[in-house]
Image 1 (cartoon, each protein chain N blue to C red):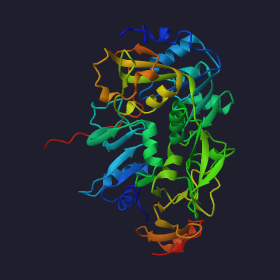
Image 2: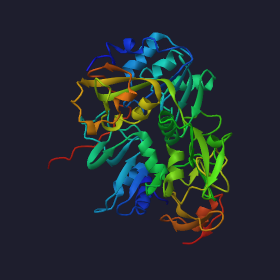
Image 3: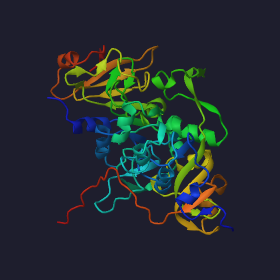
Length: 238
Length: 214
């Protein structure tokens, strides 16, 4: 197996594919399973006017928060963005446009986009602000709103493990938006914690087939962040 | 006298049934997991992409890759499965989840729910709430009966809606209401008073019109 999909570092993995005004997808839920090293490399590239599709917007100083800080994002398509002071500021003063999208609609838009489906109907959001200006159609006595599929110029994803073909495996809830985004990027770049030879991952366990992954960067032992550290007391031994 | 947050959660737990798949929102709804009756099998769904959610981890055992939809660290169980967010909402939208318990800012007498935005204030987003109320078989709202003395149970919501006619039951610190959806428009019915709360107290604290069936 050649190393044609393997890049030495995040900067090399993004070489030649970033441009001002492009649409970027970024995987993760909160700070869980975000392609943090790639996001930092996007910042370093200085590319601006980005439309970013991501469930959340990071926090100040971590994840997409760094791209907000540097004002490289002009539009966010997200379901929830509560954890970010920088975000609030830019949103309230009009520097940042936000398209609030119900979480399940967002993930289905991305899944549909990757699967070549330009639009679909969902009952989510019927009769709310979300449905304004969109086609509503009645099926079997119930109203549904039409939502468009979403694709991106580049999708940035995080995976637990990849082989050199780009077959991806995820760990626990760090899977979240990463598999759909991998399918919806015209170029998908994966940052992976473990990189192995083809054949080392049981083909039955592969979640994202390598056809969706064009570039891979190996980031061993990444720092992972916890937003809400919740614990329970250990049972006291009498 | 009225119910505490714990008592409200305890009352909501009475709506659980053996074998239910349940999604719990943030706040009081989360407390419901403390009152699952002994011997009852309930699988909790976390919409980021997990079914069979366990309790918070012991200190020192937190895993950054294992969080719930509130971004809190949780644990897995022998029944746990992980899946993508699209699969998670297929489960929700497809009507496979039996029960969703969530908070609200306002509920109207026709079952409309508002819980995601206050115009003029910083909007954080709806997260998965619109999908949950549209797709889950039964939707229970658990909330304080009033906000700073103002009724939250209204004739119609004046905040932007999360869902239209989606609420099946409301549990507040003062009472329990059910929505009868057999007719053209849902009808709100008072079915239970909290300990030490009189019907007159509930009427005084409620703008919505409701039938009394206690």
